[in-house]
Image (tube, rainbow, N blue to C red; front, top):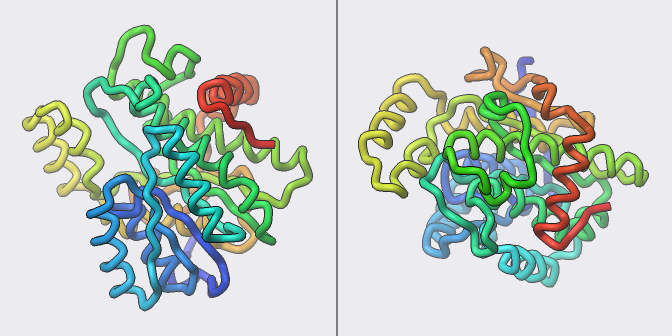
Length: 305
């Protein structure tokens, strides 16, 4: 695929919300959307970082980045953020579920869920549900869920994993959260199609990209050696955050992207231009997706379709 960001169409009049856009992949995604005319809201937890990122995005793009305070690890906070957004906007064309946490020591969300599954999956599940009415008011709504090739490291996910009831392994939990992202994306596609909805549900992964994510998780536990090793490895072999955002941008903006499709880097799914890639067999399991959907509805108190 010879795609580049210059192939992104004119997005004037389209409204996008990108979670976790104060740095890394989310920032680069928001930047290109703004450069191509979209109205962009960056949703993040830290007000100071949000203000700084919005100012940089506005200066670099010629557009105006808006801010939405959002803590994906707090389900009531997610509902409040979505309500606030709905009061200010009458529709939403593109939701990019990008924010995430990777490999921290054991932590819980405000609601008592394991932090990675709770933030990476349940928070975005709830956010998408709360914003669905706005998405359905758009003519061609699209939801991009950002996963990872780390979903290939796990073979399944169970309801107990939402709270890490059977012990905690940070990398296993991360892989399961990324598997959950793909199960959610594909089940959302199935449900949207069954409802006759125009909603397009797609996913992307960045390959191996230079962001703070690889080292920030270990730093939460004060594991400075692991953080330094991961940081060094990332600087040595990873592609830029801007390149890592290409699959998300392609998934979010390319015309005629099929709902249910998944995009990653072309070169061994590690780096390069975006291409269509395949989720694992577990990620494509419709029964597992239905189970996860039910557990997610029970956990968050909200549903889609």
